[in-house]
Each structure stands twice: as C-alpha cells, then as structure tokens.
Length: 348
Image (cartoon, rainbow, N blue to C red; front, side, top):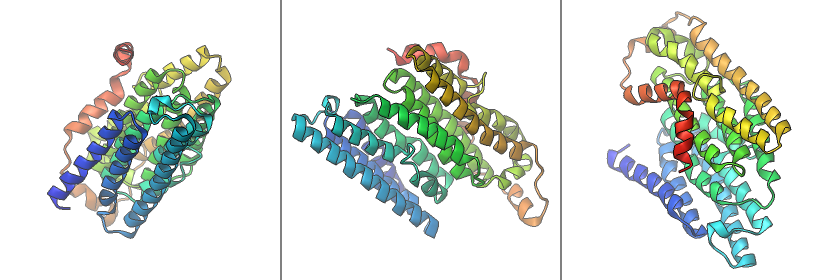
C-alpha cells in the first residue's frame, strides 16, 4: 500500500476514535465510530485475498448494523426525552438498544459470532488494530451510559466469559483463539462496568497490553496456527521461553499482570453481594486458561517436523521492530506489584 494512503487511513482511524472520545452529542459520537470503521476497511482488504475481502465485507455489515442500531437508539431517546446528550440517556428502551448496539460493535457474546470469522481473514497487524484500537471508542460510550436495568450488563458479561472460554477450546487457528480470548476479556470488563468503571478501565488497559504482546509474538514467529508455533524454538529461543508467561498472564495466573484485574473484579463483585456471579466468572476463566495452556504446550514442549517446509521460515531474518514487543512483554509479565499505584492513578 502507498505510504501516503496508509498514513491517511491511520490518521482517519485515530481521528474517528478521538472524535468519539471527545463528543457529548450522540450524532458526533456516531460520526466518529463511522470514520474509524471506514478507515480500517481498506487496511483489511489490502491483501487482495478472497478471505480478506470476505472479512472486510462481514466487518462492514456488522459495524453498519451496530451503527444503525445506535443511531436508532439515540434518535428514540431524543424523541422520548428530548435529549441528545450521551450522559442524559435515561429511557430504558433507548439505553438497552444502545448497549446492545455497542456490544455488537466490540464483539460481546451473544453478538460475537462475526469476530472470529473476521479476525481469521486478516493479517496479524490489522488483527491487532481490530482487537485493541477498535474497541476503545465503543467502550468510551459504554462507560458513559447508565443502564436502567443493571442485570443486562451482568448477563452480557457472564455469557461473554462463558462463550469466550468455551469457543476457544476447539480452535487450531491462533487468530480465532485470540478472538474468543478477546470476547472473554471483554466479558470481565462489562461485568464490573456499572459497579466500578475504574476497574473496567484497568482491565481494558491490561487487556490491551497483553493482547498486543501476544499478537506481536505470533507476528515475529509468522505463526497463524497451533502447529506453526512448534518452529518457534529454532527462530527465537529467548522469546519462546518468555511466551508461556505472556499466555499465562492472559489466563490470569498470579504473579503475572493478568491476575490483577481478575482479582480486583472478583473482590468487587463479592462486595456487591454477587458471590455466585463471581464464582461463575472464576470458573469460566478456567476454560480460557485451558486453551492458553494448549498454546503454551504446542510452543514450548513439542518439536517441529524437520521437513523442507518446516525449516524454510527459520532461515529468514525478521524485519519486525523488537522494542515494542520487549516493552509490552515486560509490562505483561511484571505489572502486578504496581496494582495499588495504577488504581490510585485511575481514580484521580
């Protein structure tokens, strides 16, 4: 792709999300969401591969559906209450519609079915943008909506953690595994959203760090399926030693960074007299942990087949920058001791 076109698309992507962040009016927020959706479509289809074009088409249709529903919800709210302000959405019908529309946009279960299929058709760089940056604008809107029926967010959160864990068990494609992992993590964030927005932001921040480092590891190894992970030892032995820690952090095991949001969310749910929900969420995390362990096993404890196609990628040096990966890996593994500091900063 022409660097000028790429720069213009990335600028539009950033501008769309920034407009949504800054807006207090529903129409402006909707416009920002549309800008970021339209900016990422050429990035998705740039491979000129049938799977990439299919993924871009599916993404466009789901995002257009979500945007239309969101516009309908905001118009309904303006019609019933006379308010276009995001913080003034008070009618139950409009609020529920807006939450469902934003859930479709970020890929929360049961509105998640487009996400694994779309992610599978993309290259890892565009997949990284879709799994991280594209979640920010809808989340900014979700944080500002006060649901009139609190059980809807709890239901969406529990279903997402369950489906995210369950769906990833049988996958062999890494991008689909990461898509289900994304749904499960978003479920944790939505679960605590109405009780402690600070914890939601903390969970989102740790999710962005952990997912980015995982995508960059797979990109460095040029791995797209579980079997391709087995060649990692010959390519990057040091990184292959650290990758299990990244995957265990995604699974939420102490003393790694991923344990911090899960621990604090379970604590907050228990304080809100929702111990059964907290127990169920903790059990669904075990499902996710299983497929992270499966990836870890394939990467570190299995030897690759030494045939011609297996050895060819080892001899090609990677041109990827390693500083972002090194920084994100360090953050993924060792941020747990900073939990009190991060909480203090987020509550300012």
